[in-house]
Image (tube, rainbow, N blue to C red; front, side):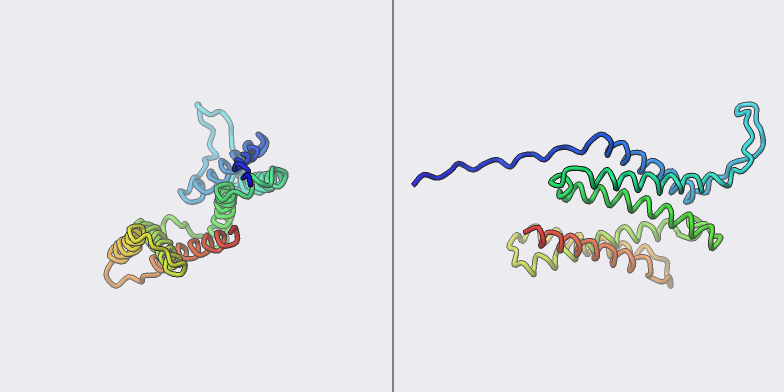
Length: 209
C-alpha cells in the first residue's frame, strides 16, 4: 500500500489594499481622538501670524474626529467581511482586527464620558495605578495559562514555572506599588481583565481543535 505524501497547506490570500488603507486610517483617527481626550488638547481661537486662520468652533474638533472614527470603523468592518475567510480565521488577524475596534470604541467612550461627566481621566488616574493595572493584567493572563496547563495535563514543567513566576511577580509588584491604605481596585480590575482575556483565548483554541 502506498502512502500519499503530505500536502502543504496553501497560504491564504493576503488582505486587499483597501482593507489595509481603511485599517490604518481607522487606527490613526482613533488614536488621535484618544490622545486628544486623554492629554486634553485645547485649540485657540485667536489668529496668529504663523497660522493666519481663525478657528470659530475649536471645541467641535473632537466631534469631527468621533464621526471619522465611526466611519472608518464601519469601512474597516466592511472590508474585513469582504476579505478571504481563511485569512480572517487566523488568530493574529482576529486579534489585530478586534484591537483596532477596541481602540476606536475606547476613544469614543472616553470622549463621551469626559464631556458627559465633565472630568479629565488623566487627572484622576495616577501613573502607579495605570502601571498596577498593566502588571495585574499580565498576572491574570498567566494564572489563566496555569489553569489551562493543569486542566489539560501539560507536562512542560519549565514553561509552567515561567507562568507561575509571571503570575506572582507582577501581582506582588502591582500590590506593593499602591500607597498605604489605598484601595486595590486598580490591580483587582487589571487581574480580572487579564484572566478574562486568557480564558477567551483558551475557549478560542478549544473551538479550533
